Amino acid sequence: MKSRLTRLPDNRIPTTIASLQQQIRDLKTAQSAGSQAVQLNQVQSTSAYDIQLTVTAGTQSIALITYTPPSTLGYSGLPYLGIANIVTDSAGHGAGTVSDVGFTGYGNTYMSIERYLPTPTQQTWQLYVQPLPSPPSWIQFKFVFFAVGQGTFSAVQTH
Amino acid sequence: MSASLSTSIHVQQLGDNRLTTQLAAMQQTLLDIKGSYQLIGGSNVLYFVNQTANSYDLTGTIGSGQTLNFYVTATAQNMSTFLGVLVPYLYVDTSTNFYSNGQMLTDVVGTTNRPVTTGVYSNPSATVTQQQKSWQIQLTTNGSAPSRTFYIKLYVIGLDNATLTFGSM
Image 1 (spheres, one colour):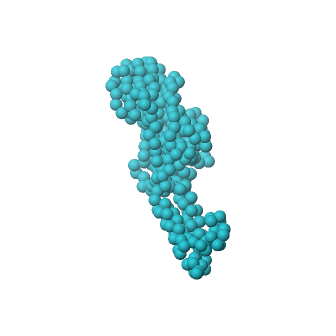
Image 2: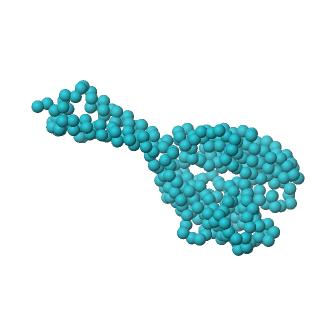
Image 3: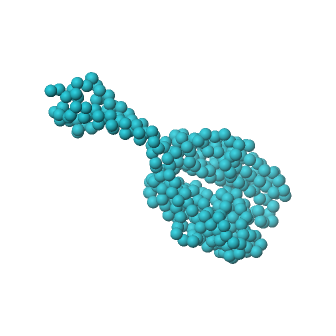
C-alpha cells in the first residue's frame, strides 16, 4: 500500500521545509529587533544605604559609582542609575530626585550626577555634592539600577 | 533535518500524514513565536555608543543671563522601540576644556560669576515615533556672567545603532 506521503503532490515536503527554514531566518532577524520585549531588572543592594558621603563646609564631595555586568562580551548590560533614597543628619530624608546633568538643591547642598562614556566592562557616574552654608556633616545615598540583565556596583568617595 | 530523512524506507513507513502533520505543527509553532514578543534581557545583550564623526555637534556663544535650548533625536536603525540614554559632554571656552558637573556646581556657588548650568530633559515638543527618542538640552548663564563659548559632543548609549539629529529649539 502506498502511504499518503508518496501520494503528496510533487515538492510538497521540500516546499514546506523551505518555508520552515525561511521562518527560522525571519525569527533570527526579529530577535535582534525585539525591542518592545527588552526586560529591565532592578539591581540594588540589601543595605539601608550604599555610601555615606562625608560633607565638609566649603569643600565639594564626590562619589564614584561603578556598575559592572557579569558578561565579559564587552559593552553589555546597559544600566540606568537612580537614587532610591537620601538621608542626611540634619535635613530629613526622602526619595531622591537628584537630576542627571542638571543640579538639585537638597539639605543645604547642591547635588548633581554625571554619567560618563562606558568602558567595555563598566559604566561609571560621578555624584557631586556642593555644600551650601550650614550643610549636613554626612549624607547617605541608596542607589537603584534598572539594567538589562544583572550586575554588581560599588560606590566610593573620591573627594 | 537530513538525518531524519536519510532513509526513504523509514519515511515511507510513517503513518498516513505523520510527516506532513509534524511539519505543519512546526510551521505553526514558528509562526506563533514570530507573532509574540521574544523576551530578552540578559546581561549579554549588547549596547552601542552612538555618535557623529564630528569633534563636537553643537557650538555657539551664550551671553549674560541667556538661556539656550537644543534638541537631540536618536533614531534606531532596527529596534521598533528605542531604549537609550543621552550622554552630552559639555566644553566651555575651548573645545577641549571639559566642563564637568562638579565645575558647574563650583561656579554656581562661587564668586567667579561664570556659571553655565545645564539640564537635559525629555523633549516635550518633539513628535517622535517609538523608534526614536528625543531630548532637550538647556544651557543657562546667570545675569552677571560674561559670554561663554560652548561646545557639546553628543553620545547616545542605546540597544541599537542609531542616527543622531540635533539643532536649536
